[in-house]
Length: 439
Ligand code: ADP
Image 1 (tube, protein in one colour):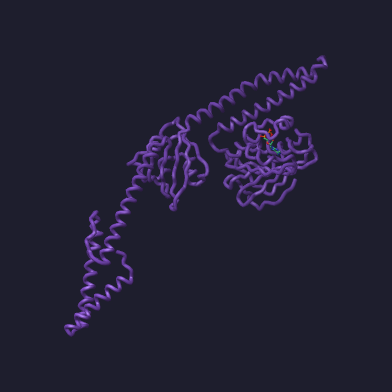
Image 2: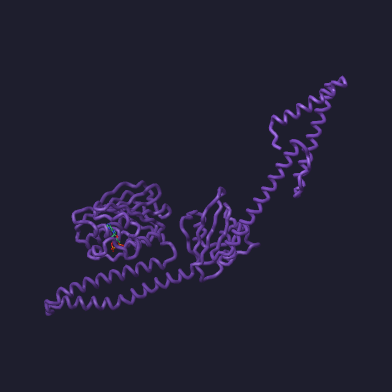
């Protein structure tokens, strides 16, 4: 039965009135009302104690058979208990199935709490990382995987990308690890994939490119030498002048491609970050400017603006290659008489090197593909301007070895800006205040 306030109150009042009426008959209405109130309070207390005992017993017992409002309370609590038990069974079943499916997954899964302690892991994770259920549950993951790159990944919380490390249990196994955060407590799901085969394939590809380029270099040097000798031969039939010029241009182009391929393989094969020698951008940029201006015939003006004398901790050779590629591209894809501006400044603690041109610009859809090997927006035009399509791939790799990012902004027909962002810990600030210098 559904008890409302009204029925409960009406029943109580009716019982009270009955007690009054009986008391009236015996000439003691107030005494009978008092006795009724005490009896009612005792009855309520008795039922409260029964309810408490029934709940505390924790057993799946049917509720005691009690009439009235108390009976309803027992009945409703009992129904709630049955519903909760069903739900619990359902969730337990779901959890069992989820665990079974993740346990059967070929990829490793580890659940970490907000302190990076292991809460759960599947069989694949145990095999890939050498974890043991008893000895490693509750341990901090960075106590078990001590690879510096992993420790840094965990500390810096840059979980938008995966990292690749050597397996802590097998020397020749490579693992890709990605962490995903979830939940209110900032728990972490760590996904581990065996990428040994992929890494081996990638190494084979890299070695093949490096070896093939190396092998091609010697015959090409011989061909270039003979072509040069033939071009200088005064007795050579004039018929051969143009073909030899074209062959010389093609062999120069091939030499350029081969040296870019070798440079790219060298950068790709290096696992560690770039060295941290202090590189003075003022002199490096001036040197690159002179080289590019000399090779391009001084047709485009290159302006240098040094807003800071801060140095970058890195490899001078690699940074030379980065700026040489960016500045020669800016010149290559600009019309004579236009201007290229190179600016070095600090944005808070970060170093920003930008190369701005007033050239042909790049279509928006091509911007994300610029750093792919051999990608050119207009292959014909690039080749004609002496491009290999490898320059920006070299730039990307060299910058990533300095933990620096490249960003490109461009407007077709208006020009482009290529900006390199160097992290604060690669910047060596000058002792005194920097002053603006324009060259
Ligand atoms: P390439 O040797 O062909 O210059 P890169 O890898 O350096 O190769 O550049 C890839 C492509 O990006 C170029 O072919 C060109 O289409 C485009 N590109 C690069 N820099 C510029 C720029 N400053 N202005 C316009 N297009 C550019």
